[in-house]
Length: 283
Image (cartoon, rainbow, N blue to C red):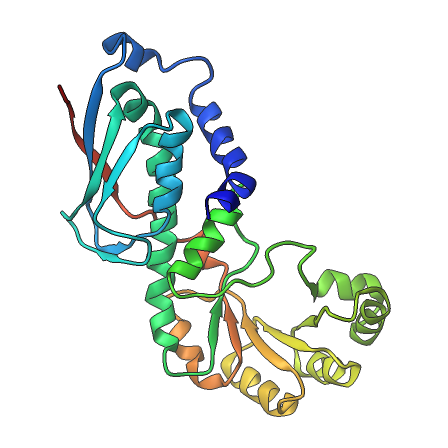
C-alpha cells in the first residue's frame, strides 16, 4: 500500500500542501519558533463512515516522517458524534501546518463514504450494484472513488482510457447507435466491453441489435426502464443513470437493472465534520 501511495497520490498531496504553504506558515512560525513535541486529538463531530485515514496521515508524514499516529479506528468504520478517533504526535509546527489539508481530505472522503453508504444499503439483497461516475473534483478522483468503495459502492470506469462509453454526442458524431457500436468494435481492443447510452426504446432496440455489451438507460421514467429491461432480456448488461440521489434511489430497486450509477455520490456529498482539538506540548 505504501508503494501505491508513493506512486499514485503523493504528488497530489504535495500539490495540495504547496497550495496552502507557498513559502511558510507565517502564523505558526510566529508562535512556534523551533521544534517542540506535541500531541493533538482527532475528534468526530458528526455520525458517519470514516474514509481517507491513510491519506490524512500521509499529509503529516510528508511534512515530517517522524510524525506518529495512535488511531482507534480504520476506514469503513461507523463513527459517532463526539467519538475520539485517535491522536497525532509530532513537531507542533508540522501538526499546525498540515491540519487543514489533512482534514480537507478526511472530511471530503468520509462525507462521500457516508453518503454512498446511505444509498448502497437500499440495494442490499438485490442484484443491482451502485456505481459512481467521472463527475469528480479535479485532481481528487483517486481519493473520491476510493471513498465510494469504502462506503459500499463500486467504481465505474476511472478515466477515458478505461472503457468505451458511447454517449449522446459520440452517437451524434458517428451518425447513429449502430454506426457508433460498429466503429468502436473495429477500433477498440477485443478485451474492452462497449457500453451505449440510450434515451428511448428505439435506441434500446438499436443498441441490442448492434451487439452492445452494456446499455445505459439514461433519464428514462421508471415504466420505460422496466420495458427496456424486458426488451433487452439479458442480451446485454443494463445500467440506469440520470439524477440518482438518496431521495429517489429506492424507487429504482425493482426495475431489475444490473447497475445504478450516480454522479451525486461524488459531486453532491456533504463533508463529514471532523476536527483536530486539544493541541498541547509534551515535555
